[in-house]
Image (cartoon, rainbow, N blue to C red):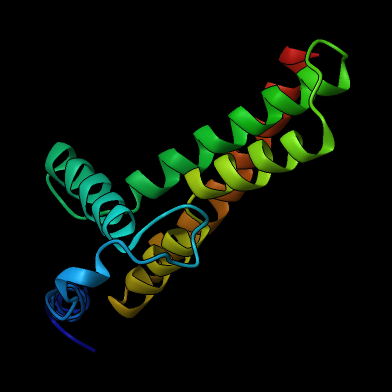
Length: 151
């Protein structure tokens, strides 16, 4: 156990910094497992969103990831409701593109898992469990609310 709750985060950031520094110039435009995202896009997203929320809240936290996941849940609920209610028509290909490609790329499940792991490694187990419960519960509420409102 460590006395500094931010030590695991600092270690993770140092490791990420080493990985980013090792990217060669010709690799920045390479594809990633994230649909339609290059290495540059992915690093820019992860760093930018989390830095913005850390700046606004004054500390590192899972708020950025939670916000994106809940907004993505609301958006997919609205689109599902519009489609199910006949107010919007999407071909199967367009539906897959929007639901899986765009909204799947927008939401950040892997970041959610990393935030939870970081909290747990920082011995903030209560916040780690709360992070999981809040994002799942609010995500479900958002998707149901979006679906109901759009239908």
